[in-house]
Length: 284
Image 1: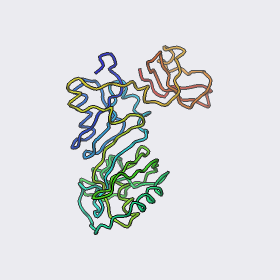
Image 2: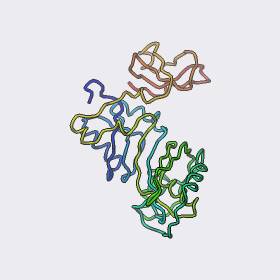
Image 3: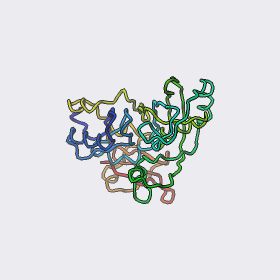
Image 4: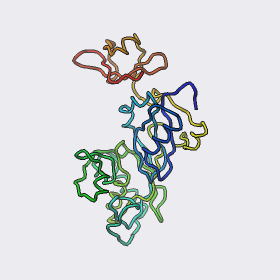
């Protein structure tokens, strides 16, 4: 672990059986960090890449949560459960008739692009002040919200006994819901059987470390700047930036990363009314 860079991004390979909050708590203790957060929840039964934000990097969370994700998923046909995965209560079963490879690829092609998706009951989305999984625990019925998502890539990896595939999608996509919807397209019942998150934007699970490795001093901390796609602009005055003053510089992108050398100071957004860039979030 870098002794110099104490604020930044740590890539963790989450094990099965832990919630994302469990990992946050464990990493904070292992690093003796003041603050630790993450840019996107992974279900307890899922494994793979969890992008952690350490100390001051937590302030940048709002700019990192919309990242594109890649997963390797397994779909089990023949069962419909209340949680849309194999760990839920079975609500219905149906004899399996496996689709052909041609049928699968045709369905994958139809599922590419922008679309709507039902949020599963076991998600952490809040409705009327409570998370959906709390309603599930209470066995309280509630209308599940619909979200707009986008599927960029779908690749078939194997078929029997579980259909294994790779998916690249927008943030907010629920793979358990995707599995159920794919099965419906073949007139089948289906649910998620396994899930590994392999990428978040340009970060790959191969770069991630285990909790055991962190405990033994392993793990590289990446600067937040490396995860942002905004144009980098040197601060005309560090004092002015820290005082939240407008930056009257030529407009380029809507958002810019304002830096002092290689140190990220703040995220600015162009304000049409003021004709200048205004500070959205200080990160010092």
